[in-house]
Amino acid sequence: MSAAPGTEAADRKSGRGRRVILWRHGQTSWNLERRFQGTTDIELTGTGVGQARRAARLLASLKPDAILASDLSRAAATAAELALLTGLAVTHDEALRETYAGAWQGLTHEEIIERYGEEYAAWKRGEPVRRGGGELETEVADRAAPVVLRHADKLPADGTLVVASHGGTIRTTIGRLIGLEPHHWESLGGLSNCCWSVLGEGARGWRLLEHNAGTLPEPVLGDDD
Image (cartoon, rainbow, N blue to C red):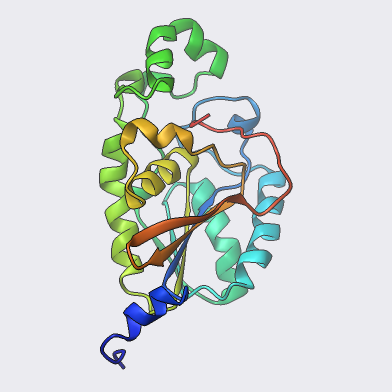
């Protein structure tokens, strides 16, 4: 049944609009080794599975209406833990994969700085850089943000979508949806494993309600840091 005219606008004004929870996957061995994963398909560690199960219990209490996930195994396995608790099916989409970073993938943080120091410094300054000959951050947002919006548009007026994805992809998607210029996306700090950010639908569009939520502060071990 469709909402009465003006109902959705009223919900947004009262703070009961749609929510999108962008949830980073659990720990992998490459996170611990500080290797750039990108689109390389690395599985969760045992600790990562435990993180996903703990986070899933918290997220299930928010009564999500839909679950969306990257098709890479670390994100898909993370989303599967929430699906077990909620009974919801997971929709997988390759557009939610981590940034493809070409020659950087598989290298440690130290190796990247040693071999691609100038490129790395330019990226951290917010300049458009094809890390390792891969994707620009804006290209990641171009593929990921529309998928998130398309699924958010299917929610009821007060519905909640959980998106299991990757640190870099989540950051670019948040930046795009809340209207930050790409140069400022770096101002959004990284997400720890299995933590999440919450976007809420307001009268002027999407806004960031929570960032890196879900645990006490932990180191960020990820491609985007």
